[in-house]
Image 1 (cartoon, rainbow, N blue to C red):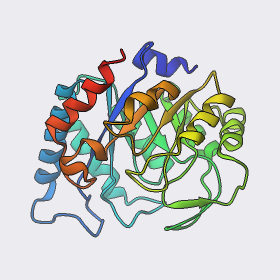
Image 2: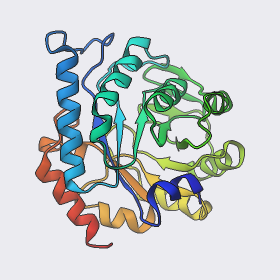
Image 3: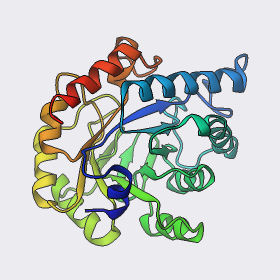
Image 4: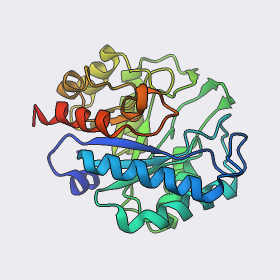
Length: 268
């Protein structure tokens, strides 16, 4: 198991909550009237609610930058770094970052902010909503090392949302191959889109072939399913279920967040 993740989380199965930024400068949904203050206020409120609820970690992501791109606008990355810098002293738990769908941008942001982990699509070949998609894990990992962040944990999402894998091997075989060739710190199993759960059979199959690798459920984990999911997975990442009305684009609901962690603590 990854020593980097053990240093971050110890022996627990971590529950990582998403802090979704509002749309960033350069993206079509950006709130020009609210500007940077609105972005910062939204992040600060969600961060406070998630930490008060007792989550093990948070991950900052630009989920609202629709339609997504493979190479993210420099202004977007700079804005994320600025906002995280503004709340950095308020973060009491481990944190990670995810800049959709740009591995090098995610690593650059992690280096700039001191994040402990990055989530991305690092491997595979896909037909996607954004067009043909072929990430380069070797390039991303070498970039991490050039930035002297060998300590940065890389979480590989091996079943990309909004995409169809052109590699017709099973999810388990693709996961096993990624671990052999690319040395991820964790493998993530996802549903088809944000907020949609991965198939439990896929999660079980991946964990069966990777008993010594962290395997996380990456999408669609709900209050009613988190306990069963954690019986198989080594951790979960959750976003939509914690929002008002369970809707991805809403703010974090402190009551929903607290109830989610109450469910988790029942088995700890």
